[in-house]
Image (tube, rainbow, N blue to C red; front, top):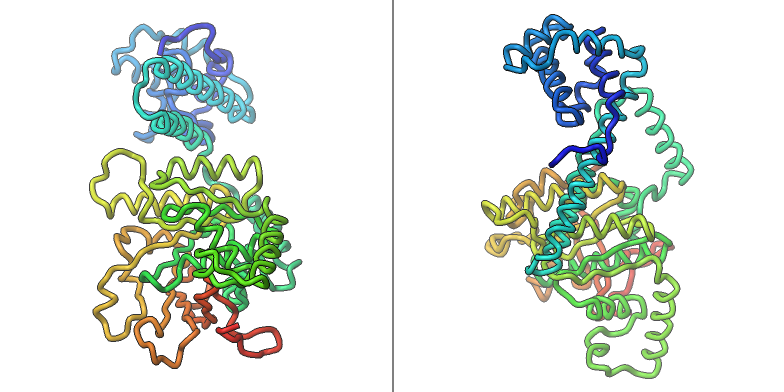
Length: 449
């Protein structure tokens, strides 16, 4: 990139930083982790700071004499000792060093943004590929800049303590009940306190177990409770997904709803269900982009979070996503990139991210077909990245005469914050719905209701 006076920079701030370090070599420790040589505008200042960093890595003090000698060794004789002395005369008090370093850093990122913008303008006129791909490339460049700029260093304990106490205080105000996003399932909320911010939750099951129904029930319950949820459906259309939500909320038979074969009473219930969902229209968003890339999903979530607010993200399902980073070495490596990216998204927005996942067919070969962690397909780092992993198992799917008819097991196979348990739920396939097994008052839910 050609450097010129129109580009953002502050020579005075650069001189102040270099002068402070040359005057007090120990002051380098305050900025060494956040300021790089490339952040400087002047080439000569980049070379001086590089020499300082080389000396630091060798555990040598970076004063005028040692830096001058290192520049000579690096064949930068055009930078004289007299100029280094001049820099020390510009040195501020070391208490201001971090402030001046931040000025230098900010100007670098402004120049980086300008470079990307100029590149976009130049390429946009002649780009002949898919516009979605071009937009994704542009977003990736800006997200790279944002990711580098937002890196946080070591934070002192008192600052962390303050934010931790604030979080504990917020939870105390809930009287020990749901402190995160409610799932609407009493036993699950009791175990977890609700889905917690920054957590990646993996929900997996074999086909036919009802994992999509279960996660849509969570989304609907959360939205009805006033929490904002975005659902990414990579397999179904938005209309198919909404039909399932309607069947569950209105308590109408989903198969008859698909055929348009409803009684007058069911049509009334359908309209009432639609009214309830409409009243919560700002709390449930749906994206039906097939094969969405991690980069695109992250970008849409960030935008939705900023414009609308966002308390939870649900993805159906993880293996239908792409990493969007070119041709991967293997599918397992790509899934690892996706799961790590989803965990980073959860941390960045401080919201729970629930991702559905498939299981290997090997589970079908065992006498006991309850899933295990080893059954996760193309798991890669999925098990490592996830804060919680849940499996759904319905015994009646394999054993029609099972005593567990109308019931499902929710197996908590990993829980970074609590116990591992198996929870029982009522399953009502005609309504595409899971329910609490016990209603308030301790009575059993009727699967046929």
